[in-house]
Image 1 (cartoon, rainbow, N blue to C red):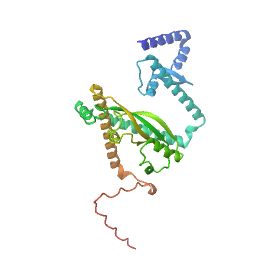
Image 2 (image 1 turned 180 degrees about the horizontal axis):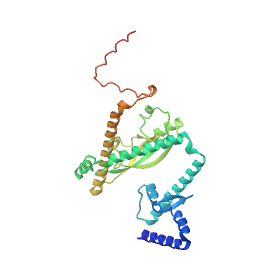
Image 3 (image 1 turned 90 degrees about the vertical axis):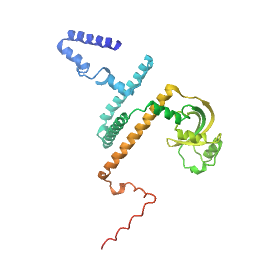
Length: 304
């Protein structure tokens, strides 16, 4: 209702201006409002370039809040980001950066990446939603995520990528030993305390962690770094009822979508293999022969 009333006021204002300015003045007002084109509600302009409400919503990526102040603040932040981007684009074009070979390659890559992502989303959207029985079976088969869910308190050492042989870490049993080794090799690291929710961690990883002796250190590679962990405490946080079923349903839907997209991509690639030609220096390595397969017959000697 508020938006409708605002739009009505804007229309009345334009009509009033047109009546006062005459036909030529009305044309000027229309050009200021976007030339009468169906561009949607204009939320801002940058040197005459319109930013519409649709563009703003798309940029926000579906973010929404019932708190009007929070929503307004988010809109302002995103709008300023769009404005700054458009200003940078103007400067880049003024410097003719859009005429460089790298620009054309990056545009092509971005377009192809976007289309490929949209196609994968389209495939994933066609996956049949899991049934309630499937969700309940998933809950029963993953007690660490649901009935036996825990929030673990973890001491961590985050070490940057380094040249230390991983075998040297294997006999170490405590974070103090790991710290001493990193210090002896002048490897930078950061200490922190984190929480690990067994609901959100790979069940296989949780199973491995649960088999470790108390206080044992385990390592998780993360973004090229090594995260050394030691559990110092835990709190039970059972997860059940309808929220658990909804969570299990979403998890199964994601897994099914990934499997569907993966199979489709593999089939697509295999079908296209005969039409893929490589330069000699870029041919992929041939897969090793299957175990138990008979050795290939020797090729006949070439005739002179």
